[in-house]
Image: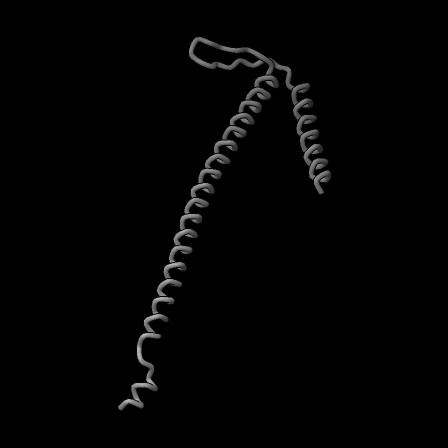
Length: 120
């Protein structure tokens, strides 16, 4: 299954790169880009578009990393809450067991209903 995923990813990337190469061959005309007032860059249209796609890919990758970090932080906080609640549940169960033991001891100290009816 892993090799099939690798093959599919490879074919998609290969097709994408081939499309970019064909696009670059067909679009060699020069275009100018005004980056900031007073600074203009002139380059082939294909180079400019490929650079724009590259910058977009880098920004998407950085966004993916940022989102992953936020998810890890959320998961960490949730696991801390779960651990705290598990600890609280354990403490409450221990308290309940102690209270049951105390109730059983007190019940043993009380006279049974058979003894009270026979004494009357």
